Length: 308
Image 1 (cartoon, helix red, strand yellow):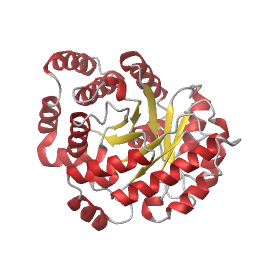
Image 2 (cartoon, helix red, strand yellow; image 1 turned 120 degrees about the vertical axis):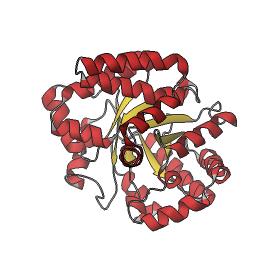
Image 3 (cartoon, helix red, strand yellow; image 1 turned 30 degrees about the horizontal axis):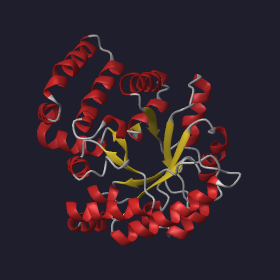
Protein backbone atom coordinates (compact mmCIF):
# COMPACT_ATOMS: atom_id res chain seq x y z
CA UNK A 1 0.00 0.00 0.00
CA UNK A 2 1.29 3.46 -0.92
CA UNK A 3 2.56 5.58 1.95
CA UNK A 4 1.29 9.15 2.16
CA UNK A 5 3.90 11.30 3.88
CA UNK A 6 3.66 14.99 3.11
CA UNK A 7 6.04 17.92 3.50
CA UNK A 8 4.26 20.89 5.07
CA UNK A 9 5.06 24.46 4.04
CA UNK A 10 4.98 26.29 7.39
CA UNK A 11 8.76 26.46 7.75
CA UNK A 12 9.15 27.79 4.22
CA UNK A 13 6.62 30.63 4.56
CA UNK A 14 7.42 31.76 8.10
CA UNK A 15 4.61 30.22 10.16
CA UNK A 16 5.02 28.88 13.67
CA UNK A 17 2.17 28.24 16.08
CA UNK A 18 4.46 28.61 19.10
CA UNK A 19 7.10 31.20 18.23
CA UNK A 20 6.98 33.77 15.44
CA UNK A 21 10.56 34.78 16.31
CA UNK A 22 11.72 31.23 15.58
CA UNK A 23 9.66 31.24 12.40
CA UNK A 24 11.36 34.44 11.18
CA UNK A 25 14.80 33.06 12.01
CA UNK A 26 14.05 29.88 10.06
CA UNK A 27 12.69 31.86 7.14
CA UNK A 28 15.82 34.02 6.93
CA UNK A 29 18.14 31.03 6.47
CA UNK A 30 15.94 29.02 4.10
CA UNK A 31 16.76 30.33 0.65
CA UNK A 32 15.58 28.31 -2.34
CA UNK A 33 18.65 26.05 -2.66
CA UNK A 34 18.44 25.11 1.02
CA UNK A 35 14.74 24.31 0.59
CA UNK A 36 15.47 22.08 -2.42
CA UNK A 37 18.08 20.20 -0.37
CA UNK A 38 15.43 19.65 2.31
CA UNK A 39 13.07 18.27 -0.34
CA UNK A 40 15.77 15.88 -1.55
CA UNK A 41 16.43 14.54 1.96
CA UNK A 42 12.73 14.28 2.71
CA UNK A 43 11.84 12.39 -0.48
CA UNK A 44 14.85 10.09 -0.09
CA UNK A 45 13.53 9.27 3.40
CA UNK A 46 10.00 8.54 2.17
CA UNK A 47 8.10 11.82 1.67
CA UNK A 48 5.64 11.51 -1.21
CA UNK A 49 4.12 14.97 -1.56
CA UNK A 50 4.05 18.67 -0.71
CA UNK A 51 1.20 20.52 1.02
CA UNK A 52 1.29 24.14 -0.11
CA UNK A 53 -0.81 27.16 0.74
CA UNK A 54 -1.60 29.11 -2.40
CA UNK A 55 -1.02 31.72 -3.68
CA UNK A 56 1.90 32.38 -1.28
CA UNK A 57 4.78 33.71 -3.45
CA UNK A 58 7.41 31.54 -1.75
CA UNK A 59 5.39 28.42 -2.49
CA UNK A 60 5.07 29.45 -6.13
CA UNK A 61 8.86 29.91 -6.26
CA UNK A 62 9.32 26.47 -4.70
CA UNK A 63 6.89 25.01 -7.21
CA UNK A 64 8.78 26.53 -10.15
CA UNK A 65 12.06 25.14 -8.85
CA UNK A 66 10.53 21.69 -8.31
CA UNK A 67 9.27 21.75 -11.90
CA UNK A 68 12.46 23.17 -13.45
CA UNK A 69 14.65 20.57 -11.75
CA UNK A 70 12.44 17.61 -12.68
CA UNK A 71 11.45 16.75 -9.14
CA UNK A 72 7.74 16.83 -10.02
CA UNK A 73 8.35 14.48 -12.95
CA UNK A 74 9.76 11.93 -10.51
CA UNK A 75 6.36 11.54 -8.86
CA UNK A 76 6.21 14.16 -6.11
CA UNK A 77 2.52 14.92 -5.49
CA UNK A 78 0.97 18.30 -4.76
CA UNK A 79 -1.74 19.02 -2.19
CA UNK A 80 -2.69 22.71 -2.52
CA UNK A 81 -4.72 24.46 0.18
CA UNK A 82 -6.73 27.53 -0.73
CA UNK A 83 -7.27 30.30 0.05
CA UNK A 84 -4.15 31.50 1.87
CA UNK A 85 -6.33 33.48 4.23
CA UNK A 86 -3.64 35.31 6.21
CA UNK A 87 -1.94 36.41 3.02
CA UNK A 88 -5.13 37.84 1.55
CA UNK A 89 -5.83 39.83 4.70
CA UNK A 90 -2.32 41.30 4.62
CA UNK A 91 -2.51 42.08 0.89
CA UNK A 92 -5.92 43.70 1.26
CA UNK A 93 -4.49 45.99 3.95
CA UNK A 94 -1.48 46.86 1.80
CA UNK A 95 -2.93 47.03 -1.72
CA UNK A 96 -6.68 47.16 -1.45
CA UNK A 97 -9.16 44.88 -3.23
CA UNK A 98 -8.23 46.15 -6.69
CA UNK A 99 -4.52 45.57 -6.15
CA UNK A 100 -5.09 42.03 -4.90
CA UNK A 101 -7.33 41.25 -7.89
CA UNK A 102 -4.79 42.63 -10.39
CA UNK A 103 -1.94 40.69 -8.80
CA UNK A 104 -3.97 37.48 -8.84
CA UNK A 105 -5.01 37.94 -12.48
CA UNK A 106 -1.38 38.52 -13.46
CA UNK A 107 -0.57 34.92 -12.48
CA UNK A 108 -3.24 33.44 -14.75
CA UNK A 109 -2.43 32.28 -18.29
CA UNK A 110 -3.93 34.61 -20.92
CA UNK A 111 -6.06 31.82 -22.40
CA UNK A 112 -7.80 31.28 -19.06
CA UNK A 113 -8.40 34.90 -18.03
CA UNK A 114 -11.47 35.56 -20.16
CA UNK A 115 -13.11 32.30 -19.21
CA UNK A 116 -12.57 32.84 -15.48
CA UNK A 117 -13.57 36.50 -15.68
CA UNK A 118 -16.77 35.59 -17.51
CA UNK A 119 -17.66 32.88 -15.00
CA UNK A 120 -16.90 35.12 -12.03
CA UNK A 121 -18.73 38.08 -13.57
CA UNK A 122 -21.87 36.09 -14.25
CA UNK A 123 -21.78 34.65 -10.73
CA UNK A 124 -21.47 38.14 -9.28
CA UNK A 125 -24.34 39.45 -11.39
CA UNK A 126 -26.54 36.55 -10.32
CA UNK A 127 -25.26 36.88 -6.73
CA UNK A 128 -24.11 33.26 -6.84
CA UNK A 129 -21.50 32.83 -4.04
CA UNK A 130 -20.89 29.19 -4.95
CA UNK A 131 -20.17 30.16 -8.53
CA UNK A 132 -17.76 32.80 -7.25
CA UNK A 133 -16.05 30.18 -5.08
CA UNK A 134 -15.55 27.89 -8.08
CA UNK A 135 -14.28 30.82 -10.19
CA UNK A 136 -11.79 31.59 -7.41
CA UNK A 137 -10.67 27.95 -7.32
CA UNK A 138 -10.08 28.06 -11.09
CA UNK A 139 -8.17 31.32 -10.75
CA UNK A 140 -5.76 29.98 -8.14
CA UNK A 141 -5.30 26.51 -9.61
CA UNK A 142 -4.53 27.98 -13.02
CA UNK A 143 -1.36 29.45 -11.50
CA UNK A 144 -0.27 26.01 -10.33
CA UNK A 145 -1.20 24.22 -13.55
CA UNK A 146 0.83 26.80 -15.49
CA UNK A 147 3.91 25.57 -13.59
CA UNK A 148 3.21 21.95 -12.67
CA UNK A 149 1.62 19.07 -14.59
CA UNK A 150 -2.07 18.68 -13.60
CA UNK A 151 -1.51 14.98 -12.87
CA UNK A 152 0.75 15.97 -9.95
CA UNK A 153 -2.21 17.55 -8.10
CA UNK A 154 -3.40 14.70 -5.92
CA UNK A 155 -6.03 16.63 -3.91
CA UNK A 156 -7.15 20.23 -3.44
CA UNK A 157 -8.08 21.34 0.08
CA UNK A 158 -10.43 24.09 1.19
CA UNK A 159 -8.81 26.07 4.03
CA UNK A 160 -10.19 25.58 7.54
CA UNK A 161 -11.36 29.21 7.64
CA UNK A 162 -13.85 28.40 4.86
CA UNK A 163 -14.57 24.81 5.90
CA UNK A 164 -15.33 25.51 9.55
CA UNK A 165 -17.28 28.67 8.70
CA UNK A 166 -19.43 26.68 6.24
CA UNK A 167 -20.08 24.08 8.94
CA UNK A 168 -21.05 26.81 11.42
CA UNK A 169 -23.60 28.23 8.97
CA UNK A 170 -24.81 24.78 7.87
CA UNK A 171 -23.84 25.69 4.30
CA UNK A 172 -23.96 22.22 2.76
CA UNK A 173 -23.94 23.80 -0.71
CA UNK A 174 -20.31 24.82 -0.25
CA UNK A 175 -19.26 21.20 0.19
CA UNK A 176 -21.42 19.92 -2.65
CA UNK A 177 -20.37 22.64 -5.12
CA UNK A 178 -16.64 22.47 -4.30
CA UNK A 179 -16.62 18.66 -4.45
CA UNK A 180 -18.43 18.44 -7.79
CA UNK A 181 -16.31 21.19 -9.33
CA UNK A 182 -12.99 19.56 -8.35
CA UNK A 183 -14.02 16.15 -9.64
CA UNK A 184 -15.57 17.38 -12.90
CA UNK A 185 -13.05 20.01 -13.99
CA UNK A 186 -9.80 18.66 -12.57
CA UNK A 187 -10.44 14.96 -11.86
CA UNK A 188 -8.87 15.72 -8.50
CA UNK A 189 -9.84 14.57 -5.03
CA UNK A 190 -11.64 17.31 -3.07
CA UNK A 191 -10.32 17.96 0.40
CA UNK A 192 -11.27 19.93 3.51
CA UNK A 193 -9.03 21.21 6.30
CA UNK A 194 -10.75 21.47 9.68
CA UNK A 195 -9.82 22.16 13.25
CA UNK A 196 -13.10 20.75 14.47
CA UNK A 197 -13.27 17.23 13.03
CA UNK A 198 -16.12 15.97 15.18
CA UNK A 199 -18.32 18.91 14.26
CA UNK A 200 -17.56 18.44 10.55
CA UNK A 201 -18.42 14.74 10.72
CA UNK A 202 -21.67 15.38 12.60
CA UNK A 203 -22.63 18.12 10.15
CA UNK A 204 -22.00 15.78 7.22
CA UNK A 205 -24.09 13.06 8.83
CA UNK A 206 -27.00 15.41 9.59
CA UNK A 207 -26.92 17.03 6.14
CA UNK A 208 -26.52 13.75 4.27
CA UNK A 209 -23.17 14.82 2.79
CA UNK A 210 -21.21 11.77 1.62
CA UNK A 211 -17.61 11.75 2.81
CA UNK A 212 -16.60 8.84 0.59
CA UNK A 213 -13.52 9.47 -1.56
CA UNK A 214 -12.75 12.89 -0.16
CA UNK A 215 -9.73 13.96 1.91
CA UNK A 216 -9.83 15.51 5.36
CA UNK A 217 -6.83 17.17 7.01
CA UNK A 218 -7.12 17.71 10.74
CA UNK A 219 -4.85 18.02 13.82
CA UNK A 220 -3.89 14.87 15.72
CA UNK A 221 -1.39 14.95 18.57
CA UNK A 222 -1.10 13.63 22.11
CA UNK A 223 -1.51 17.07 23.73
CA UNK A 224 -4.81 17.81 21.96
CA UNK A 225 -3.35 20.94 20.36
CA UNK A 226 -5.89 22.43 17.90
CA UNK A 227 -8.15 19.37 18.35
CA UNK A 228 -11.59 20.89 18.93
CA UNK A 229 -13.78 20.57 20.87
CA UNK A 230 -11.59 17.91 22.50
CA UNK A 231 -8.95 15.32 21.69
CA UNK A 232 -11.31 12.50 22.64
CA UNK A 233 -14.11 13.70 20.36
CA UNK A 234 -11.76 13.91 17.37
CA UNK A 235 -10.33 10.47 18.05
CA UNK A 236 -13.82 8.99 18.33
CA UNK A 237 -14.61 10.14 14.76
CA UNK A 238 -11.88 8.10 13.12
CA UNK A 239 -13.69 4.72 13.05
CA UNK A 240 -16.48 6.42 11.05
CA UNK A 241 -14.07 7.65 8.37
CA UNK A 242 -13.00 4.43 6.70
CA UNK A 243 -14.23 5.54 3.25
CA UNK A 244 -12.27 8.78 3.05
CA UNK A 245 -8.64 9.84 3.40
CA UNK A 246 -7.74 11.37 6.76
CA UNK A 247 -4.40 13.16 6.93
CA UNK A 248 -3.03 14.10 10.35
CA UNK A 249 -1.51 17.56 10.73
CA UNK A 250 -0.02 19.43 13.72
CA UNK A 251 1.36 16.09 14.88
CA UNK A 252 4.22 17.84 16.71
CA UNK A 253 1.84 20.42 18.24
CA UNK A 254 3.75 23.27 16.61
CA UNK A 255 7.10 21.97 17.89
CA UNK A 256 5.98 21.37 21.46
CA UNK A 257 6.14 17.56 21.15
CA UNK A 258 9.01 15.31 20.14
CA UNK A 259 8.93 13.19 17.02
CA UNK A 260 9.00 9.99 19.11
CA UNK A 261 5.96 11.21 21.04
CA UNK A 262 4.13 11.92 17.79
CA UNK A 263 4.95 8.54 16.28
CA UNK A 264 3.90 6.66 19.41
CA UNK A 265 0.58 8.50 19.47
CA UNK A 266 -0.18 8.06 15.75
CA UNK A 267 0.59 4.35 15.99
CA UNK A 268 -2.57 3.84 18.05
CA UNK A 269 -4.99 5.71 15.77
CA UNK A 270 -7.20 3.90 13.25
CA UNK A 271 -8.26 5.00 9.76
CA UNK A 272 -5.48 7.50 9.10
CA UNK A 273 -4.34 7.90 5.51
CA UNK A 274 -1.18 9.86 6.09
CA UNK A 275 0.72 12.59 7.87
CA UNK A 276 1.83 16.10 6.96
CA UNK A 277 4.68 17.70 8.89
CA UNK A 278 6.87 20.73 8.34
CA UNK A 279 10.66 20.34 8.38
CA UNK A 280 13.27 23.09 8.59
CA UNK A 281 16.63 21.40 7.89
CA UNK A 282 18.08 18.46 5.97
CA UNK A 283 18.75 16.56 9.21
CA UNK A 284 15.25 17.27 10.48
CA UNK A 285 13.78 16.08 7.18
CA UNK A 286 15.73 12.84 7.12
CA UNK A 287 14.99 11.93 10.73
CA UNK A 288 11.32 12.86 10.53
CA UNK A 289 10.38 11.04 7.36
CA UNK A 290 12.52 8.00 8.12
CA UNK A 291 10.60 7.49 11.36
CA UNK A 292 7.26 8.22 9.75
CA UNK A 293 8.01 5.81 6.90
CA UNK A 294 8.71 3.07 9.45
CA UNK A 295 5.44 3.91 11.19
CA UNK A 296 3.51 3.74 7.92
CA UNK A 297 5.01 0.40 7.03
CA UNK A 298 4.05 -0.98 10.43
CA UNK A 299 0.52 0.40 10.16
CA UNK A 300 0.01 -1.12 6.72
CA UNK A 301 0.79 -4.55 8.17
CA UNK A 302 -1.38 -4.13 11.25
CA UNK A 303 -5.11 -4.31 11.83
CA UNK A 304 -5.23 -0.50 11.93
CA UNK A 305 -3.94 0.32 8.44
CA UNK A 306 -3.49 3.65 6.80
CA UNK A 307 -5.71 4.09 3.75
CA UNK A 308 -4.32 5.51 0.54
